[in-house]
Length: 233
Ligand SMILES: Nc1ncnc2c1ncn2[C@@H]1O[C@H](COP(=O)(O)OP(=O)(O)O)[C@@H](O)[C@H]1O
Ligand SMILES: [Mg+2]
Image (cartoon, rainbow, N blue to C red; front, side):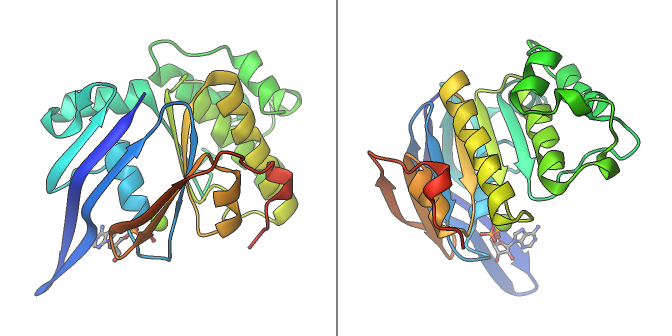
């Protein structure tokens, strides 16, 4: 799935002031790659992720995904696009505390038309042995693995990760990055990772840098680093 954004602008109104969360953001994102979106807090990283994922609408410009044009979709079609094509992972794991690991992942499974197999996914994220545990019985890294499984079981073409390692220590964070790399290798999932950890840019095939809602730099990386070797910051 190729993604194009063409001069995408999104504003928020704060009293008299117009905030440009995205300002004429144009970018081409290749299929089946890992793409890091870097930049300081407030630079528009999450907004870019959310408009590509169909969580948010934008004011002007165009986004082409999978030969579809997002601004032309009605709300119901946008929901369908999101449900069938996109998995989300956030810094907060957003697991349901009263459900077990397996039941949490079932939530993702039920959303999809062609879900993957439960045992296969839980094995791949290393959580099959803990499938009957509740979130409070898990470490942060394990909870993030469950959140990744919940996103992956939908079999999405696009996995959008907003600060996925933001709440994790270096070792656990790198293990999550290794898992994302494995997912990219194994399923060919296009993965966008929002981060202010510069090092994560070095493990990506492409890095996009944002500042004040604008895309100020994009670079391709022919030799992405092994997640183990990235500098953690
Ligand atoms: N719901 C909102 N209401 C008002 N302003 C918002 C909202 N969401 C984001 N913004 C503003 O848009 C800008 C970009 O935000 P965001 O995309 O979250 O940045 P980042 O993820 O890089 O920290 C910031 O100035 C932020 O305050
Ligand atoms: Mg953000």
